[in-house]
Amino acid sequence: MDTTTLPTPARCIADFCLIPIGTASASVSAQIADVQRLIEQSGLTYSMHSAGTTLEGSWDRVHQVIGQAHTLLHQQGIVRIQTDIRVGSRTDKEQSFEDKVNKVRQLLGKDQ
Image (cartoon, rainbow, N blue to C red):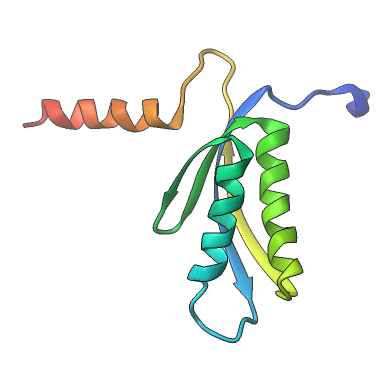
């Protein structure tokens, strides 16, 4: 198999949690705000939550923005960053992260 011609999936949903290490303070909210500004400018669909951010878009663009978030914080003097990423893709249908959440809410509504 020639892996150099194997394409990446067209779209993905990625949930990531970026963790700056070795900062002067235990608080990283200022850095996370900077990352959120970057994501807003990216044009990707996103949702910030208490433990990270969910991004939706093309495989290449989603991963590029996560890499740019690393570079942004490195440029601020943070020398080490650890990021947890969970990525999903599917080819049978288009489904946004909002669709997935709404489906579960619909099922929960039937419980009442």
